[in-house]
Image 1 (cartoon, rainbow, N blue to C red):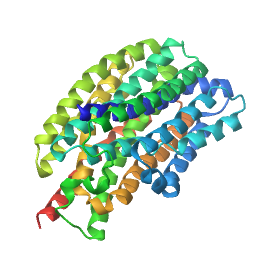
Image 2 (image 1 turned 90 degrees about the vertical axis):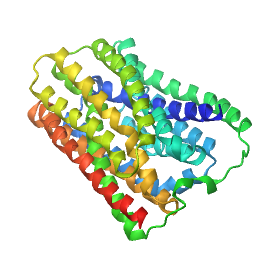
Image 3 (image 1 turned 180 degrees about the vertical axis):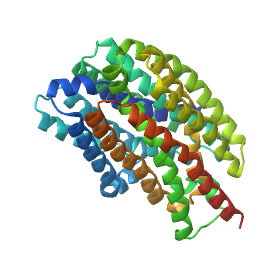
Length: 400
């Protein structure tokens, strides 16, 4: 029962975080029209916001991770939600840009915080399913974001207000769940001594850890590069270029989200039964078909068919997500976890910088997202390969 309380906190954190980002990505076409800014400039600014996110773990990461778990969750969600709400009320694009910079400070922390809670309080044999549960927040938040935008008929300000209030409402719910969790926990003051207990049996040198994290980060970069396109630029392609309505996108994503959430949980259960390098198998099952679907979507000329292909691509991409943090937790020793997770998350932020810059330039210069999608499909193929190299190297060292 106490595990359920913890998973609800983690799932709420990831879903709310992604919901707010999804709403912002969905309303980009309206925002560009309202502020009369070019796509190239917007892409550069989004890259700069991501630079701010990349610097955040170095500047405030230790402070965030040193807080008590609930305090860290509340602080991060407060910054994200208030910046989302403030975005809806600004009239000046300069102020808008400043607000987004403030929000970017909290962007790197929701998923590492969820991973930290799971690895601290849940035994290693159950972490695959636990990671899959909070990981479904990505797809649920993405679908809910488009539902919100469709419900307000594309009004970007109203959509941002709703997303911000959802984040504010999550905070007291998380506090209640945490109190329930503590009541059912034998040691309410559990320290990080239990953190990553499955890794206390092996030690690696700093150079070996660096090699493992380097390959893991390359794999994460290639995978999340695709997610950045789906997450931030999907509406630019479907709404602006193909004329698909927000309602149709919301319906397609919602149906897909239900299937993806269920399948992701089953993959998490399956991952708990895989041993060693076999844990990379879900990556190939998910990412390779996703790359193929993206390539097919490039040559599709029908808007609805393209929306369906993109939804299926997202579905397959989601099947791989439990493996991202499962492999990281398996391969990185406890003593190096905090610094290594900062590097690992940095790969996500770097992919956002590159993706925003490249996609913004291509849309501005060529007027189409299809070239961005083709490039993304190519980059994605390398992700499972990089993860496989990390797995073979890391698991071999664990046996030495």
